[in-house]
Length: 196
Image (tube, rainbow, N blue to C red; front, side, top):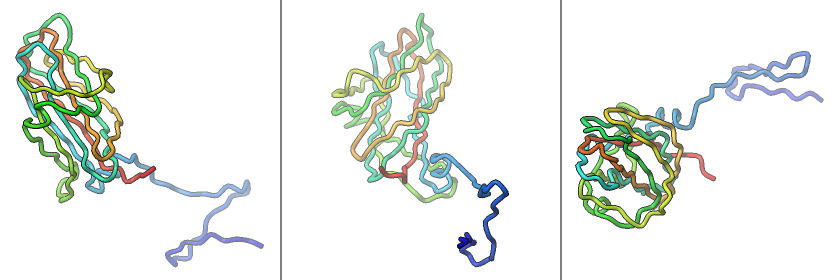
């Protein structure tokens, strides 16, 4: 008994099978990030320039997810300008789940921007910019991301970190003699519709 696979839309098309019993198909694939951009579920968060004058490790961004679905931090970007130099590049670090600090309670609000022009979709995040005088505490001492950052440079990379509801990250900067420096950081991120 033969089985026929037909187009369910009623157009009458059938599936092609060749002499070696191979089923032919054509597919269009895209990353989950690209799919989220097209659906208006992808966002950018960016501190814009902050001035760092101190020499200690300083929190410059805090981001907490309040979404029911996972929020994926797909890419991380950093930019520095007007650095005084120094013998070693500054160090950027990202830590999971800080529990306290002035960046959380009184940092400057950062508004996520939808990556799909014209979309009215929003994302439920707490995002704060910090800088000189701000603190963050309670996170594990081992960073999940670690990156050097030269004077007057920009860095961008795919990172693929996922945040469950209530989870957070803090981004810090250790100038290593580059201060004063103007610096910004941010993430490309999206709401994941894939559930485990």
